[in-house]
Image (tube, rainbow, N blue to C red; front, top):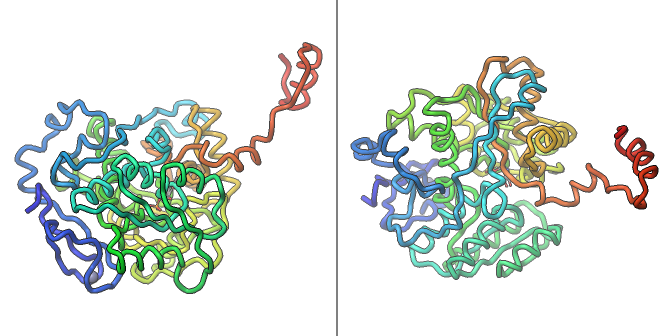
Length: 424
Ligand SMILES: Cc1ncc(COP(=O)(O)O)c(C=O)c1O
Ligand SMILES: [Zn+2]
């Protein structure tokens, strides 16, 4: 046994693995995720509320007992996690619900929750002795990976789609990643294909933010749930709203609450709600239509301002569907215009600036309230997953530019009226 990891088990074929054997993917090549199981009986001997509260560390590594790697020396950290749970009073008043909390993941080192998973992933790569990491993403996950790899002195090979915007590529190049734009969108995602081929041929460590190629990263986002429970003084909220792309975050969040149930620290799960844009809703559709969780229909032409949620195929959809079923949760498909409205609400009522994918959870809550699903007295947590400055183009499109005036009070009052509809 490795620390408290009992074994890993393929989510598709059930084959089990030992952490010591450094497993990364299922040897049956079935695209199953190697889910990590812990020795809860052993953990229960000491892992109490008091034990958690006594640890003053303000990062996700406070939960080292419930995370790989095995050796503390192998942790690669930039101080991720330990994010605030903000009581959103003005927003709650506007939406007519008494208690809304924002889990503000924009505070992470590279501006998104992906830092949690990539910190774990790179730490395991270090423990397993890898120097070269490969990934298929140009988004928040790749940026996070490149930052942690830089910290650890490792090489990152990042395969991005040909259309990837320069803003994202620039960040990757600056962190030192070797970035390649890959042509062609056929049956198999060409970026995932190259990630897989470089893993198989050259033995690079696959470090995307989805499960079938990287079982370790999913342990990062589960610490969000540990933190929420402790921040609410060991109370379980009624609802947690989660933006969904590959559904790894959703699976991780569910795993976190479930760990705490297994450890006897809470006695039930909150209802988890998956939120996707109607420009790319394969996971929400799969849940609503009761599709086979292992055979979710990919979305043919994803198109949404929430580019972080644009995965046409939810790689961890099976875990996500289990999360919704076990928690008696739900799923919401929201319009891009509601996502923009949620962005404005977060920023202007609560001072939290999120990118569209980061605000999608709130858009889901707004829709669920209008559908009468969430009651006035319910306690709600919304995950705000990525920072608004990640996406300056969208910001400009929505907020517009500032008017230019001379240093003249008359001009100020005229333009104040014209542009903002206000009197001084
Ligand atoms: C800001 C943001 N929120 C949410 C998600 C969704 O996470 P997942 O792909 O694990 O479902 C992503 C994924 O890239 C993201 O970048
Ligand atoms: Zn398998």
